[in-house]
Amino acid sequence: MSAPKMRQRYAATALPSIFTMVCTNGNYMEQWNDFMNSSGEEQEKLQALLEEEAKRNNCNKLLKDQREVNPDFNAQDYFQRIDRRLRATLKKFPL
Image (cartoon, rainbow, N blue to C red; front, side):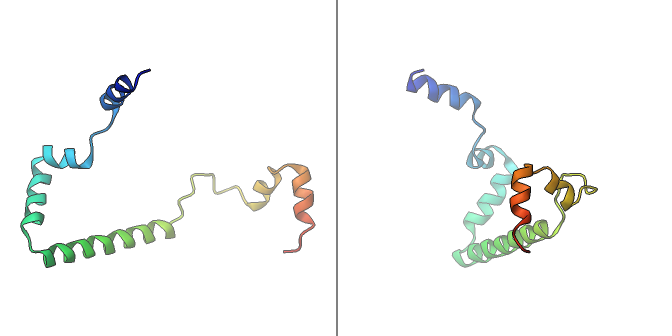
C-alpha cells in the first residue's frame, strides 16, 4: 500500500487528538480560554495542583487490589501451573 493511501486510511480510523476535542467542545474551550487568559503564575499553580492530584490518584490506584483473577487461587495454585521441571529447580533455592 502506498504511503498516501496508508496516511489516508490511518486518518480515517484515527481517534481525534485531545486538541481537536478541546476545540470542538464548548465547555473545554471555555476552560482552555480561562486557563490561557490567566497569568503565568496562576497557570503554574493550576498545573501543580493537577499534577499533585494525579499523583494522589495513581497512588490510590496502586494501593487498591486491582487483581482480575479469582482471589480463591493462592500462591500454591499458581506455582503448580509452572512447568514441573522449573518447579523442581525453583524448590532447590532456599527462601
